[in-house]
Length: 67
Image (cartoon, rainbow, N blue to C red; front, top):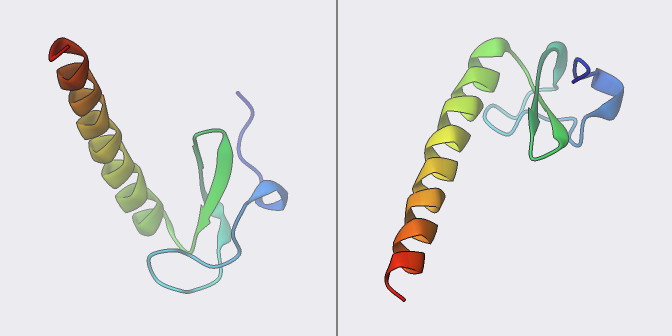
């Protein structure tokens, strides 16, 4: 997979801080390049989305086993 580039970001403002995004603080999420103002905000987002996605998987598994 290619390294995320600033020209492909779906946002110009960091969702955590409200500051402008920087090219050294990008990540991919569900196929989209998301930008952040610094690596700390990017890492915080990655941790949060991993936890959220894992919780959704558990819910889906539990819903499937209840049938």
